[in-house]
Image (cartoon, rainbow, N blue to C red):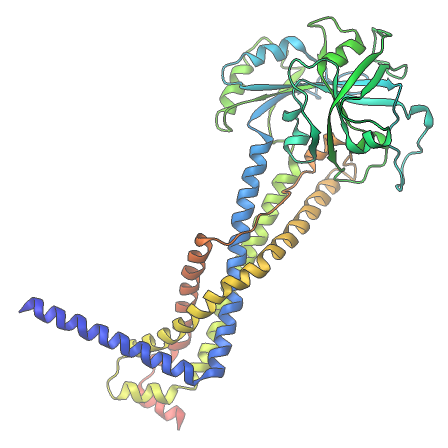
Length: 473
């Protein structure tokens, strides 16, 4: 008997719910203008919400990809507080220190860098055309400042996206007399993959003490593209005049004895970001002059990247919070107006014994029916504008982050590739609306609707039926 009564109660509940939905449907289809206004409010709010959610997810993915490209690891370089380097400020990291750290447990890869200056016998630098800056003397148009590396694929300018290999291959361990050049440099000088660039020790390089006097023929094995994030004022700063060679080429030009060469710096890669601090501590226990040299974790020099992530996150939170707050306020306003027009109806319903809870439920049911349609349509609205809004945010954040960095440096942020890492920001947002964003949209939308309904109906339901009817009369 008890089970039978429970079943009867369930059936009555379903019937009442169906009747409530039917009454809500009849009301919203009869009051078309009011329904369309609420539909528009919910559509605009939903479009803003789902766009912000999609941009937020895209920003998180982009940041993760950027950090992955930068790589987990650390770098050894001059400690500028005690070691200013060579006369022109170059690194003086000894080969023995680099080799020792390469053997530390947990180090998976190592990028060694050496800087060099040479005269080009069959090529000239790309001129700084169409820009103001230092006067370009023809005397130095064949003087090349270049970087020797054992694995150019690990260079932060390639991993960070400033430069991109277009043709050929990267420099790799064991290469001898190989080179990467910018595609514009190659085009101007009539060079291509497989061609040879002849380099010789430069008389302008005061740090080439040994002056081997011998020329080196270096084969071009790859062409890359890229532009300076900040307009250069000197042709030596231009990406187009950036050249990478293998380490052996630098050693030949400087006549280094094996093991006596010095490096600009070296970067050591680890399996994960979390493992890096422990491996750095192991490296610091080695017999190295840690007063003259220091270790820094990868990513610490990407100042603008961190600021761009924070600024973009702040803009997204503002968009999300603004959408929710404005949605509640505007929706509450229209629902209050809606309720005010139904005072008499509510007073009569309460006077004949209809509970206040059922009346509030009726209004909630009406708003939810409109909300489902409005929020559902906002999916298509978000698809239409989310990418454009994301692109606008990205451009603004990038400009603001670089400008703030430059101002913080007193306007002295360089245009060279070493400064490019510092000025690197989030470079793309792949904005897509998926199931997670749709679910989050409806959850937030439901909360907004419930709050707005409560704000609009509670003041009326707190009054007695006689008071409501008296106000109407």
